[in-house]
Amino acid sequence: MTIPIIFDTDPGIDDAAAITVLLTNNVFDVRLITSVAGNVSVDKTTNNVLKLAHYFNRQDIKIARGAEKPLVKPFKDASNIHGESGMPGYDFGEISTKMIEKEAVEAMHEVLKNSAEKITLVAVGAFTNIAKLLQRYPQDLKKIERLVVMGGSLSGGNLTSVAEFNVFTDPDAAKIVFESELDITMIGLDVTEKALLTSQSMSELLQLNETGKMLMALFNHYHDGSKDRGKPMHDVNTLYYLLHPEKYELEDLWIDIVTDGPAIGATVADILHSTHSTTNTHVAKDIDVPSFNAWYLLQIARISDANINAGRLEN
Image 1: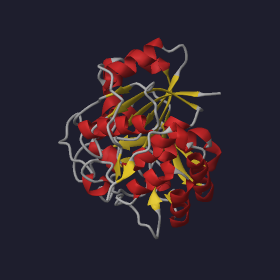
Image 2: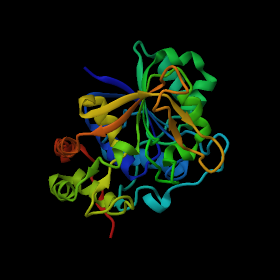
Image 3: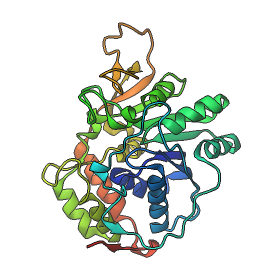
């Protein structure tokens, strides 16, 4: 059984780690990948999606360019974490893949409208494209099976003391999304700061195949975590959750988004159930970390060198 999926992303090195699984695991029926400004500019994130689709010989994948800035607040990237290009460290060569002419929201709408079955949305960047889709085509809600997001935190931020980067980048969009009627699963820093690819796993990854070498070339330029402590695979968690939800501990909570002031971008959970009589989000709180590491290595080990356009390491 396959999962029809639209994947909204801002590559980014951990996004690349996720897209590697997305494009090589046959369980994922990838209907569309959309880019958004986040870790780097939308021109760069779009180009990075094209690089990965080229690397894995996935010319069949539709790729659409999305929002170049948040709905309200000024755009600020995370190139200090992901490098100037978003995916430094590996030369993907001349790119053969092309994006489609439709922009992301129109492309999403077309896929949803024409699908005979409901689609799973996965968002691992700022939620600007998703918010615009809900505003422009509210009727598409009924075609969305669920939304799985990497974003938010119950226990503190990685951009400010309270805000996680994806939500902070466009809190107004996040507010629209979380206040919609979507079935949302939030996989935030409470889990992803635990879901580290360990130093042992990274050593093994390098020995697996050409894809392992490509990923390690990127990870060597990833300024989140450390080689000793491990590197957080934030965005990969969305796909691991879809395949193995039993590896996560979740709690249903109401999540509010702060859109101004010193706590802008915070995801505030009604943990005591004192201000809301219902919930709007399935919130991931814990993960089986050893199983995550073993699963990711297995995913990469299964990728045949014969099926990729192997590039070359940068000096």
